[in-house]
Image (tube, rainbow, N blue to C red):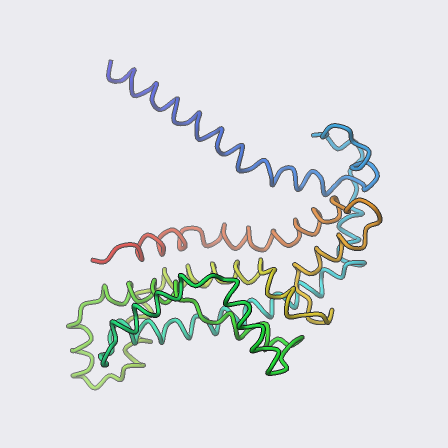
Amino acid sequence: MKDKARIIRNIIIYFLLTVWAIFVIFPFFWMILTSFKTYSAYNSETTPQFIVLKPTLENYISAWTVAKLGQYMVNTLVYSITTTFLMVIVSLLAAFAFARLEFRGKNVVFVLFLAMMMVPTELVIITNYVTIVNLDWRNTFTGLILPSILSVFYIYLLRQNFMQVSDNVYFAAKVDGTSDFKYLWKILVPLSKPTIITITILKLIECWNSYVWPRLITTDKDFYLVSNGIQLIKEQSMGKADIPGMMAAVVCISLPLLLLFVVFRKQIMSGVARSGSKG
């Protein structure tokens, strides 16, 4: 009876997981399917068609030529890599200070620092926008990058990792004459490698998908990111939005992120799991 109950339970669990997987995968399937439809064929459909009788690559060609998606992807790559690199450096130094250094009011400062996570994003965007405009950094990579190099959440994750390392290791290193920077670079960074990889990938994805801030701070097409490219495809269409063209652009934009996640999925999972507990 126990074996039969276990089998029935497993069948129910796998059935529910299968249904859930279909719901999750279906938007990606529909996105790819729509990207191979022509503009006229898509708008002439009275009911959604799940089979493309005459697939076309016209949408992909248009995305790379008319919408200049290639140029925007290069801009996004520069923005994402530079922002992520600076964010990781700032997060490592801040996390080390909160985890290992002793200074007056450290706990109070850290609590106030965490309280920044409760500030609405809209308020931060407003103050950042005013600052960037006053510094005359609109339509520059500096204006795009600087407001995004601080992440309270990632600093918190790294601090939790650093605090898992015994204090005795730090004191022994100091006795041997090791500087704080060398201790951070030679001991803490290697031990926290999974978490560092995790926050690097997550920040890359965040920058790659960034929409509101780039739309707000850039009006020069030379500094447009991929999010601006998708919006241009929508604005260039006559009448109804060019959904097939937009889907083709989204497919091209999504592929690098999917490959990144597939390659580093184990590091992401292990980094998040390790950061969630303190030994």
